[in-house]
Image (cartoon, rainbow, N blue to C red; front, top):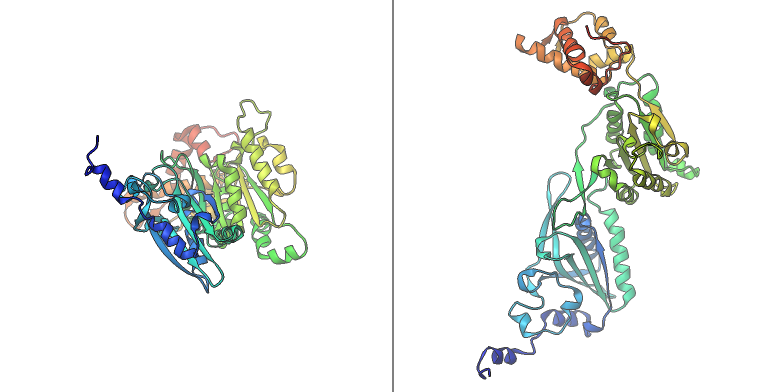
Length: 467
């Protein structure tokens, strides 16, 4: 038998406990909140900052005001409180911290932006929003177990006097989420989080691409202009093309031997299209084709760069091919974009012969394929000049070296000049490259480097024999 003055008696004397959130919401709406509808929606973790900015935009619009209330979600903050729990009847257990939510500090989480700055975003907070015509209560919270650790999705729960008002709020948030996205106009790639608490969720990574100038792209006469017409000019005359009922969705394929400048050309296009969101798809990101295209659609104008597309687009009949599902997803995504969707696909490959024919056969998938060939004599001369910048080159006639690099890629010539500078460095500063240094560099790369080095650097001279 428990004594009348024991712990249970003290708890009994405290009941019923007044739910402070229920009281605040009742004052906010002017009626019992337990009868009001709640509409909720969850967003991917990578959209947390965008959701926060969208809500901030909404609350700061003319004629609106908002108060933010912090929430302590019970014992150890193990689970984020829901809106329904905020209006549930209180209890003595809640009061002593082992039950329901209580008012506490507003929780913020720093999220890194593309320039390295941090944006402090509300992780858990209740917005009490007022306007001349309506009242809303918006709960922003993480949506996963151990919510206090900050992983998982973020969820918005909206309470309003009318369900339509809550739905309208979420519609406005969606529009602002796209408009204010921290990823718009940036260079990004998608990956999968390795964080156990994040449960393998998609994450977005920012990238900084080097500024590539036109003179750095050494291609045969007219080739770069044709590439630019398909990409840059289509962007420049976007409005005129739309008015003429011409589609904006387009794709181009850059193919050729390794080291010829396909990736550099793609990066040049990205650096010229500064207002365009650039989504890089490589490596593990190949499995996120659907998510990458969805993001491109939302953040258009956009450019999707898929390097080494042959890794996912081999002939479906090829022996050992296990990427059919990813290939189908790529084709479906490219087909699924509407004609007025301003998304540019740039694909690169070293192996055009094994590409799935359907990828290049239908307009709207790939409209034009451009071969980026090994540089001819004129291009090799320009490449030697380009990669000599910063060096003193004491060579009156480069003709012998231009001939010796027949069949070499741009990457190979770049490495030759780097290696020549390395051989010249012991002779003193500033570095002066003499003919002997170029000869030594060529010998080390072509002869001593062996077949693998020549292959890696794109040296394709027919009939080559080591001396």
